[in-house]
Length: 193
Image (cartoon, rainbow, N blue to C red):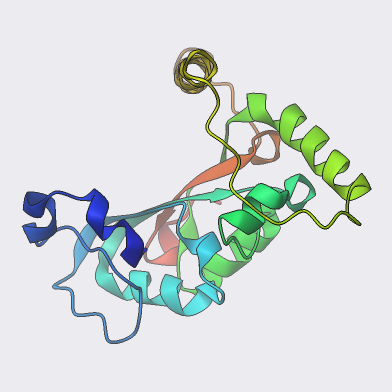
């Protein structure tokens, strides 16, 4: 997002490996890259196909794209609208979009699974309140103790998922999280799924 430019230091903006701006066809980046991350990006793009294709073209053969997107349209809330999201992704939709761009999906990983019951409840309450004339606004940041607790919970859930995956080979289905983290490879023949 071009508006995030002020959040970056002058040194970061001077780093040729960092791009802040739009994903448009006239993008002038020197590729190919081994890794591209698009964390909470593509849900903000009205038509994500050209952007995904552009990222595919910037990767070397065998390069990896890691994307993180909100999952499950049934969790849609005013928060999504306030953040200018165009969509939340189902597994099938996300896999289809990245495959159309020439990628293969290595894995879909559900993230923030502890948030799902709260988001689900919030979405149901908002549906009942649909006739309300309330404007769409970003929710307030919780008080510091609650925010610290939520940050701790995110860290613990990430550790828990990684521990279960490494030690016990347990996989969380992507639908179990409010977001999906997806490592994607190029070319698509190298995909595991």
